[in-house]
Length: 556
Image 1 (cartoon, rainbow, N blue to C red):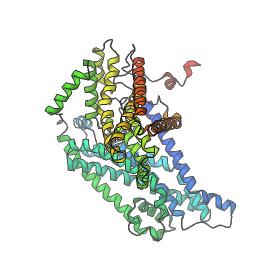
Image 2 (cartoon, rainbow, N blue to C red):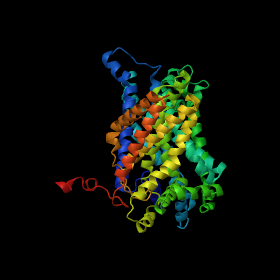
Image 3 (cartoon, rainbow, N blue to C red):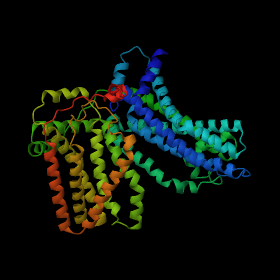
Image 4 (cartoon, helix red, strand yellow):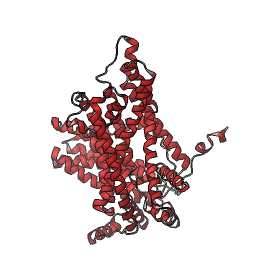
């Protein structure tokens, strides 16, 4: 039991304290901040959905309630909860199954395999339970108060509804979590571990796009659902209705209409749990067999291309070392690829419905299409600026310590050239090809090149104060204070991309305007390069700010 307890807490903490957040205090602060935001948002959504039940009896005491629509508010909340849990599960993809070094270490200890498996399952249940608790601590009593007022202000009914809401949210979250985990296990079993690791990043990115896109169809979907058709095909295949059935079955108000959906939800969870357990045991054995069988082989063509780049593009050994290090990390680390792809997926997912609507309406010359080019390049630059702070092999920075020289600019040159070669230039080609179907090849190339030059300006600005070795510095999170300045960051990004898109639209079709824009961008990039190449000290390890550790008492 002692080993089970220790391992359970260890695996549970790993969901929050990892290479991205290595400090325990910082990890706890991050978790508290995230759960607090989730609690407030969930409570606000629950209050908004139940406002009519809380306010109407006060204004019109003779109103009994809205018995035919009250279940739909819970359906909306469950859908929101399942989307959030799905996104969280996708982000925590790498922490679901035991890592290879965990298996190597634990296999040497006198611990039974069933203990390792049980501790992992308990940590997963605790993870789902923690997020469920944060979503329901306010929303459950709000749902209980709203529906109790609609049906007679009974304390017993209030407790019953609050309990039913909490159980239905937990069940829906558990379903989403198990469903995604079963898909990840299926990928490994069918494709093999090596191919699955490479393909899973694209799968996660696509899944994130789908989850975010679902927010855009909320109103249309729920306007078509009613008690008359909730049990009919195809609406009965919509998972949130299953757990609305669980909610109504416990409350006992519309139980007959939802009994079949309740059985579907219960059966789905049981089936997924059995599949998950089976996959886990199969993957456990498979991972042990292939723990140390990874190698990267370069084709002759790739080797030739790299030799050309090393001679003409990466002109110093230090630049070549930085490029090889970045390429190796992004090629081997699924965590880094996933975090980076999340920024791209978020942009595509959030604006996918708007793009589809403009295409359907034939508005191919809309300013948004010009703006979207710069949004994509912005996501690439900012995404890599964020992911480069995530450590991959902290101990490896000793190689850069012993090879450090006076040419500090080569570190930044290597980073920026690597980003340009690996991500910005391929994105320029991709955008030009896709936009050629909308505007023709010439205009697409000119607008794409404009976006590429603007991304180079942004690249210089993003790394103008960067003083670290990529992927090798122990970083203190939270310095950007996103939880405070997120609104201003979002507003600034929108204004920046909109203005660039508007300039691109005004210049479309006029080559002279584009030449002027290219010349201006080139001058700006040249000035920023000159400013950034100065003498400075490399930061190999960040220390937490003193105000975090002593709460500012040092200044008193």
